[in-house]
Length: 231
Image 1: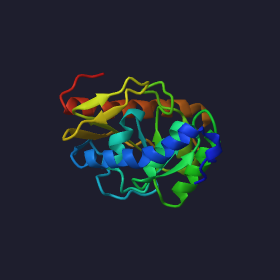
Image 2 (image 1 turned 180 degrees about the vertical axis):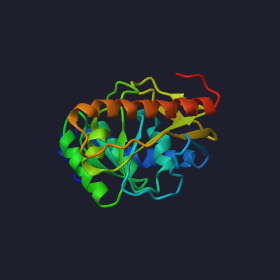
Image 3 (image 1 turned 60 degrees about the horizontal axis):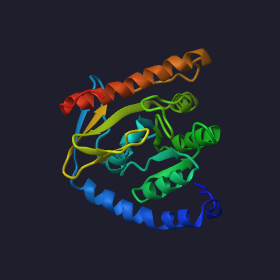
Image 4 (image 1 turned 45 degrees about the vertical axis):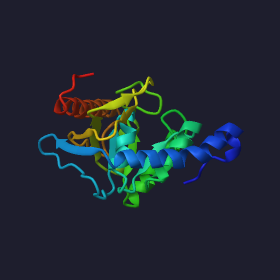
Protein backbone atom coordinates (compact mmCIF):
# COMPACT_ATOMS: atom_id res chain seq x y z
CA UNK A 1 0.00 0.00 0.00
CA UNK A 2 1.13 3.54 -0.67
CA UNK A 3 2.65 5.35 2.29
CA UNK A 4 2.51 9.13 2.76
CA UNK A 5 5.77 10.84 1.73
CA UNK A 6 8.11 11.50 4.62
CA UNK A 7 8.06 15.22 3.77
CA UNK A 8 4.59 15.38 5.32
CA UNK A 9 6.15 14.93 8.76
CA UNK A 10 8.46 17.08 10.85
CA UNK A 11 12.02 16.04 11.64
CA UNK A 12 10.95 14.94 15.14
CA UNK A 13 8.08 12.89 13.72
CA UNK A 14 10.38 11.19 11.19
CA UNK A 15 12.76 10.35 14.02
CA UNK A 16 9.92 8.80 16.02
CA UNK A 17 8.77 6.84 12.96
CA UNK A 18 12.28 5.44 12.54
CA UNK A 19 12.93 4.51 16.17
CA UNK A 20 9.60 3.73 17.81
CA UNK A 21 8.23 0.85 15.65
CA UNK A 22 11.09 -1.61 16.30
CA UNK A 23 11.21 -0.77 20.01
CA UNK A 24 7.44 -0.94 20.52
CA UNK A 25 7.05 -4.13 18.49
CA UNK A 26 9.72 -5.93 20.53
CA UNK A 27 8.11 -4.82 23.79
CA UNK A 28 4.62 -5.89 22.65
CA UNK A 29 5.97 -9.21 21.37
CA UNK A 30 7.69 -9.94 24.70
CA UNK A 31 4.60 -9.03 26.73
CA UNK A 32 2.42 -11.03 24.36
CA UNK A 33 4.40 -14.18 25.14
CA UNK A 34 3.06 -13.98 28.71
CA UNK A 35 -0.60 -13.33 27.91
CA UNK A 36 -3.17 -16.16 28.24
CA UNK A 37 -6.12 -15.96 25.87
CA UNK A 38 -9.50 -17.49 26.76
CA UNK A 39 -12.11 -17.67 24.00
CA UNK A 40 -15.88 -17.46 24.58
CA UNK A 41 -18.71 -17.05 22.06
CA UNK A 42 -22.44 -16.55 21.88
CA UNK A 43 -24.53 -19.62 21.11
CA UNK A 44 -24.17 -20.73 17.50
CA UNK A 45 -21.01 -18.71 16.85
CA UNK A 46 -17.83 -20.46 15.72
CA UNK A 47 -14.96 -18.19 16.79
CA UNK A 48 -11.74 -17.70 14.87
CA UNK A 49 -9.03 -19.08 17.14
CA UNK A 50 -5.38 -18.15 17.60
CA UNK A 51 -3.18 -19.20 14.70
CA UNK A 52 -6.08 -19.73 12.30
CA UNK A 53 -5.83 -17.95 8.95
CA UNK A 54 -9.27 -16.53 8.17
CA UNK A 55 -10.61 -15.87 4.70
CA UNK A 56 -12.38 -12.91 3.05
CA UNK A 57 -14.17 -11.66 6.15
CA UNK A 58 -14.56 -8.31 7.88
CA UNK A 59 -13.49 -8.05 11.53
CA UNK A 60 -14.77 -5.35 13.88
CA UNK A 61 -13.67 -4.45 17.40
CA UNK A 62 -13.42 -1.38 19.60
CA UNK A 63 -10.34 0.82 19.25
CA UNK A 64 -9.29 0.29 22.87
CA UNK A 65 -8.28 -3.35 22.32
CA UNK A 66 -5.92 -2.81 19.34
CA UNK A 67 -2.90 -4.03 21.34
CA UNK A 68 -4.15 -7.51 22.37
CA UNK A 69 -5.76 -7.90 18.93
CA UNK A 70 -2.38 -7.23 17.32
CA UNK A 71 -0.91 -10.22 19.14
CA UNK A 72 -3.89 -12.57 18.92
CA UNK A 73 -4.48 -12.19 15.16
CA UNK A 74 -0.87 -11.77 14.05
CA UNK A 75 -1.00 -14.90 11.84
CA UNK A 76 -4.09 -13.71 9.96
CA UNK A 77 -2.35 -11.54 7.30
CA UNK A 78 -5.26 -9.15 7.78
CA UNK A 79 -5.42 -5.62 6.40
CA UNK A 80 -6.63 -2.75 8.56
CA UNK A 81 -8.07 0.65 7.65
CA UNK A 82 -5.84 3.32 9.21
CA UNK A 83 -5.92 7.11 8.91
CA UNK A 84 -3.28 9.07 7.00
CA UNK A 85 -2.26 11.02 10.11
CA UNK A 86 1.09 10.78 11.88
CA UNK A 87 -0.48 8.51 14.50
CA UNK A 88 -1.85 6.34 11.70
CA UNK A 89 1.57 6.11 10.06
CA UNK A 90 3.15 5.10 13.37
CA UNK A 91 0.52 2.40 13.96
CA UNK A 92 0.92 1.13 10.39
CA UNK A 93 4.67 0.67 10.77
CA UNK A 94 4.22 -1.20 14.05
CA UNK A 95 1.47 -3.47 12.70
CA UNK A 96 3.53 -4.41 9.65
CA UNK A 97 6.09 -5.93 11.99
CA UNK A 98 3.36 -8.34 13.10
CA UNK A 99 2.39 -9.36 9.57
CA UNK A 100 -0.46 -6.93 8.97
CA UNK A 101 -0.88 -4.47 6.11
CA UNK A 102 -2.84 -1.24 5.87
CA UNK A 103 -5.21 0.63 3.62
CA UNK A 104 -5.00 4.34 4.31
CA UNK A 105 -8.16 6.34 4.89
CA UNK A 106 -10.70 7.05 7.61
CA UNK A 107 -14.32 7.85 8.27
CA UNK A 108 -13.55 11.56 7.86
CA UNK A 109 -10.84 11.76 5.15
CA UNK A 110 -10.27 9.37 2.29
CA UNK A 111 -13.10 7.16 3.49
CA UNK A 112 -14.40 6.07 0.07
CA UNK A 113 -10.87 5.35 -1.15
CA UNK A 114 -10.28 3.26 1.96
CA UNK A 115 -13.47 1.25 1.43
CA UNK A 116 -12.53 0.50 -2.17
CA UNK A 117 -9.09 -0.58 -1.03
CA UNK A 118 -10.55 -2.97 1.54
CA UNK A 119 -13.00 -4.31 -1.03
CA UNK A 120 -10.04 -5.28 -3.23
CA UNK A 121 -8.43 -6.93 -0.20
CA UNK A 122 -11.54 -9.05 0.36
CA UNK A 123 -11.68 -9.97 -3.33
CA UNK A 124 -8.10 -11.24 -3.04
CA UNK A 125 -9.17 -13.61 -0.25
CA UNK A 126 -7.72 -11.73 2.72
CA UNK A 127 -9.38 -10.34 5.85
CA UNK A 128 -10.29 -6.66 6.35
CA UNK A 129 -10.25 -5.07 9.81
CA UNK A 130 -12.06 -2.03 11.23
CA UNK A 131 -11.59 -0.43 14.62
CA UNK A 132 -15.30 0.29 14.71
CA UNK A 133 -15.22 3.50 16.77
CA UNK A 134 -11.90 4.83 15.47
CA UNK A 135 -9.93 6.88 14.84
CA UNK A 136 -11.42 9.63 17.05
CA UNK A 137 -14.54 8.16 18.61
CA UNK A 138 -16.88 8.63 20.30
CA UNK A 139 -16.09 5.50 22.27
CA UNK A 140 -18.32 2.44 21.76
CA UNK A 141 -20.08 4.00 18.77
CA UNK A 142 -19.43 2.21 15.51
CA UNK A 143 -19.08 4.11 12.24
CA UNK A 144 -20.94 3.19 9.04
CA UNK A 145 -17.80 1.99 7.23
CA UNK A 146 -18.04 -1.73 8.13
CA UNK A 147 -21.70 -1.83 7.08
CA UNK A 148 -20.99 -0.19 3.72
CA UNK A 149 -18.05 -2.52 3.06
CA UNK A 150 -20.15 -5.58 3.91
CA UNK A 151 -22.85 -4.40 1.51
CA UNK A 152 -20.31 -3.73 -1.27
CA UNK A 153 -18.46 -7.02 -0.85
CA UNK A 154 -21.03 -9.48 0.52
CA UNK A 155 -18.53 -10.43 3.25
CA UNK A 156 -19.79 -11.19 6.79
CA UNK A 157 -18.73 -9.03 9.74
CA UNK A 158 -17.08 -10.88 12.61
CA UNK A 159 -17.70 -9.13 15.93
CA UNK A 160 -15.47 -9.57 18.99
CA UNK A 161 -13.85 -7.87 21.97
CA UNK A 162 -10.59 -8.62 23.81
CA UNK A 163 -10.71 -7.72 27.49
CA UNK A 164 -7.65 -8.10 29.73
CA UNK A 165 -8.19 -9.13 33.34
CA UNK A 166 -5.46 -6.70 34.40
CA UNK A 167 -4.43 -3.74 32.28
CA UNK A 168 -3.14 -0.20 32.29
CA UNK A 169 -5.89 2.09 30.98
CA UNK A 170 -4.73 5.25 29.24
CA UNK A 171 -6.52 8.57 29.74
CA UNK A 172 -7.42 8.75 26.05
CA UNK A 173 -10.78 9.03 24.30
CA UNK A 174 -10.85 5.23 23.76
CA UNK A 175 -9.56 4.25 27.24
CA UNK A 176 -6.79 2.36 25.44
CA UNK A 177 -5.92 -0.95 27.10
CA UNK A 178 -2.36 -2.16 27.70
CA UNK A 179 -2.62 -5.68 29.15
CA UNK A 180 -0.21 -6.31 32.00
CA UNK A 181 2.28 -9.20 31.77
CA UNK A 182 0.95 -12.67 32.65
CA UNK A 183 -2.68 -11.56 32.58
CA UNK A 184 -5.67 -13.44 31.19
CA UNK A 185 -7.36 -11.93 28.13
CA UNK A 186 -10.92 -12.89 27.24
CA UNK A 187 -11.61 -13.10 23.49
CA UNK A 188 -15.39 -12.71 23.32
CA UNK A 189 -17.28 -13.32 20.04
CA UNK A 190 -20.82 -12.14 19.31
CA UNK A 191 -23.11 -13.04 16.43
CA UNK A 192 -21.81 -12.21 12.98
CA UNK A 193 -23.49 -9.34 11.13
CA UNK A 194 -24.69 -9.87 7.54
CA UNK A 195 -25.59 -7.02 5.17
CA UNK A 196 -27.39 -8.08 1.96
CA UNK A 197 -26.12 -6.25 -1.16
CA UNK A 198 -29.69 -5.30 -2.10
CA UNK A 199 -30.44 -3.74 1.30
CA UNK A 200 -32.02 -0.27 0.77
CA UNK A 201 -30.21 2.78 2.11
CA UNK A 202 -32.96 3.34 4.68
CA UNK A 203 -32.03 0.02 6.35
CA UNK A 204 -28.29 0.71 6.72
CA UNK A 205 -28.64 2.65 9.98
CA UNK A 206 -30.61 -0.18 11.69
CA UNK A 207 -27.83 -2.55 10.56
CA UNK A 208 -25.24 -0.23 12.07
CA UNK A 209 -27.18 -0.27 15.32
CA UNK A 210 -27.28 -4.09 15.20
CA UNK A 211 -23.49 -4.13 14.77
CA UNK A 212 -23.04 -1.69 17.64
CA UNK A 213 -25.24 -3.84 19.90
CA UNK A 214 -23.26 -6.99 18.99
CA UNK A 215 -19.96 -5.28 19.81
CA UNK A 216 -21.30 -4.17 23.18
CA UNK A 217 -22.64 -7.67 23.93
CA UNK A 218 -19.19 -9.07 23.21
CA UNK A 219 -17.60 -6.50 25.53
CA UNK A 220 -20.04 -7.04 28.39
CA UNK A 221 -19.75 -10.83 28.12
CA UNK A 222 -15.97 -10.51 28.36
CA UNK A 223 -16.26 -8.31 31.45
CA UNK A 224 -18.66 -10.79 33.06
CA UNK A 225 -16.40 -13.74 32.18
CA UNK A 226 -13.52 -12.08 34.06
CA UNK A 227 -15.73 -11.04 36.98
CA UNK A 228 -15.36 -7.35 36.20
CA UNK A 229 -18.08 -4.76 36.61
CA UNK A 230 -19.73 -3.32 33.51
CA UNK A 231 -18.12 -0.07 32.37
